[in-house]
Length: 169
Ligand code: HEC
Image (cartoon, rainbow, N blue to C red):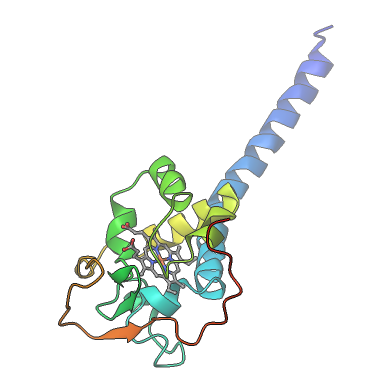
């Protein structure tokens, strides 16, 4: 029954809930960005996507993080360059990001690690990258196997590999 007392209790509850929700979304945004920063660092995204990060023991200011790398990785797949994620993510909706993060990419991008992240973690990463300005230039274009490149690159050609992997059946 809707007595004045229950209505009043309901109103008080509603106000309390509204207060909690407002507090959660205000704090939640910062918390989400901070979680995204933590994930970017601990999942190794900077190692490849931030210029000089590997070579400089990770001492690169945040404003240069994930701006893409002109130093390529060359292997049997050709030569790939870690993309400028600041630009890439600035052009994606959350849904497009989730789809991209779950799709195959060329080596040595550990896309299968990204694929296993929860939606929450992926969206935290997204929020963090989008909280930084979309700056820099796109990374050099992919070069297929056998195509010479003028940029610096790491040689990722496997050598003296024991034949442990089965090829075919
Ligand atoms: C070992 C190096 C390496 C690491 C570590 C790495 N990436 Fe990459 N990433 C690459 C390379 C190289 C490419 C380009 C692949 C290609 O050309 O298909 C790439 C491409 C991408 C792309 C596609 C961008 C676009 O615009 O197409 C996304 C998204 C991405 N990486 C996200 C991440 C995130 C997030 C992390 C951390 C969890 C990460 N990467 C860690 C090397 C790396």
